[in-house]
Image (cartoon, rainbow, N blue to C red; front, top):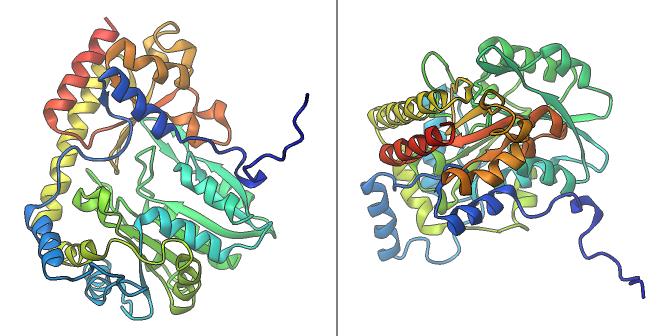
Length: 398
């Protein structure tokens, strides 16, 4: 007898099942593999910041609901950070909103700013929550693909301009870019800003890896460009900068009208979160420049360990200018080892074959075939763990 029951999942989310991160992390546990898939550190952040959280707990700060926009101390610290680092001035009371991590900030921004049918341009490959949040808001995603260009992935500005239509409402920008490790240049950001102003577009910019840029790359917030201050929602996060991803403390900075809109959606998601941790993050943002420099140098060294090891193991390795991640091309390993360039098959077999977990980049594409041969590895792990992973991968390639 054929069931006539209606499906439980609404059609907007029908294409989204269990995330690849959950699947691959479960495989890591089942096989005892080294997990270089999900982007979380395997060490905690600064001891003084952990102690600040403990102190807040003991002092009874944040044990009950914090204020809806976030505790005043953190909002002031976020505003001070933006001023000190980028000469961007924000009013802590009307232009800063604390969220349950950057993921909630993205969801709240898209839910607040999109009408059903609005088009959103996002750079493909993109973090998986982007597509789901656009769908939940009733928007239509329009991918503009970052393509391999030498040893990195680059944006085609002509393709971006051609993607804008009369239905385009918003640009969703991510720099430094996950998963490719690309950091948009001043010239690229200038062109994006000019396009947004010319076509009167809103911009949501995910800058959670702002403090993880390497070599000659420079992170420049899009809100600093002419005409962008009042049309840009900038998203930041403590998790990636201070290695406390479980605290889930993120934020939005924008004009009062945009912050008010995002808060209208945010209040019906988590309402508030992470009370005691907000006080600790306020102290973290005031750490001296030496902390951020040392953190960046440590991650750069880990990037180099993993990148050189992957190259020696036979992978094609793209240069990472920012983030926690290295994107590789598995095709140089040969058809048999690379499963014919199928990143999904390669990553699902890798734990049993080499005791290492990675993520297939194709999951971040609408055009899955464009990402098929690319695989992402995370280097935000202890150096010894990375060295052991490299040893195992080299054995895979013989």
